[in-house]
Length: 138
Image 1 (cartoon, rainbow, N blue to C red):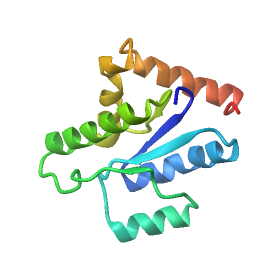
Image 2: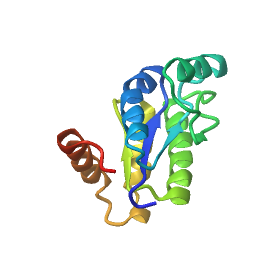
Image 3: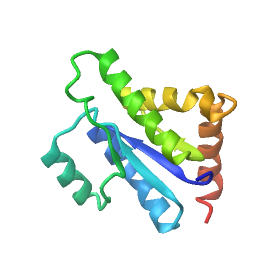
Image 4: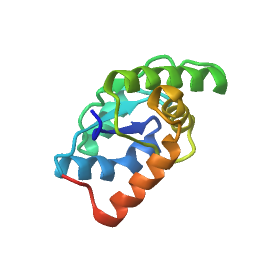
């Protein structure tokens, strides 16, 4: 969906930081979905954290990253999973926050030529600035 927003989470601090944005999207009834990259994953802890923050279960929960032994393998698995989800849903904007491997993977997956002009980072920055200035469009 062209106006759908994809929110990337993958670490516990990232989930906490993105929770207010997810809540704002829900309150505005703006089309969105969450991808959990699985970078840091403990089934019990994630379920508890999402419940404590009042968040719904992510639409996508990528597998294989937490078990990877190297940063390169972990990032590659998350990148492949994000790309597959992006190709399926075609979000208008992908929101990432922070410097975790999850965010690098999502940004690189959204940067690919499949998504048009390869200017995803500019779209993300511009859209985030607009959200901060004008609020979430309905």
